[in-house]
Image (cartoon, rainbow, N blue to C red; front, side):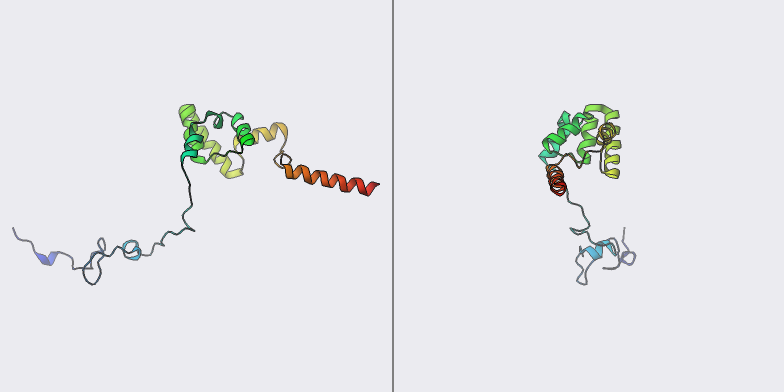
Length: 150
């Protein structure tokens, strides 16, 4: 059995295995990926997943409707979208998984999750009146208004 060397591609002519002029493999981004832009810190989002995300997934208080919103408001804790979806699936099965996806889509689209929308519809949108800064600003306006009347 003989191999016809004329059938093999010449060095540097095979696009699947780019080589340099010396015949070595060329693993540079441009040689391998062509005109596709190289990812940078500006184009790749950061994710600092870790132990805290695992705790968010297994913490049932994060996933009980309305209770999760109260818990996050009291502790200042947050939950990332993946934790919301996986925790929903862990505690609610397939329905909880789908609910986590729905809640994440609503939160990403509107800035508030379903529980926050429900609380706002029941008690009014009090997102700005709960902060200490808002109370201080309202107090200062009241003081200024009372001085004007005197």
